[in-house]
Length: 130
Image 1 (cartoon, helix red, strand yellow):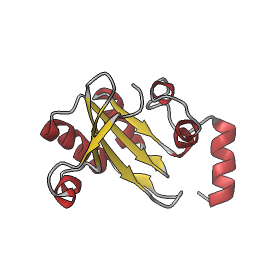
Image 2 (cartoon, one colour):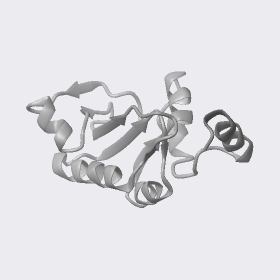
Image 3 (cartoon, one colour):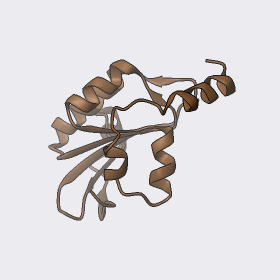
């Protein structure tokens, strides 16, 4: 996957959001994609119902690729359906990679792998107290 070459608003943007998609676009290889974005506090996790909403948006829009990007993390119950249904779960650590120019396959290689190694999680817990 590369960077989307065309992004289109599908109908009313508020309707698209209610259907679980913040962005609907087309990749350079002509596959379609839906993206759901959540900006949450670092201590809040993405719940499984939010992942299910994106799965529904993928079906509704007939998208080939679904991406869920968040500034926080994914709960264990939300990671399982992401992996099972091929949804790319981009959490706070992956955003840094992506923002620095890594292509989507880079975070895809570790999709569902959790929120970093033991040392990273320990630093996160020390910083945020959870």
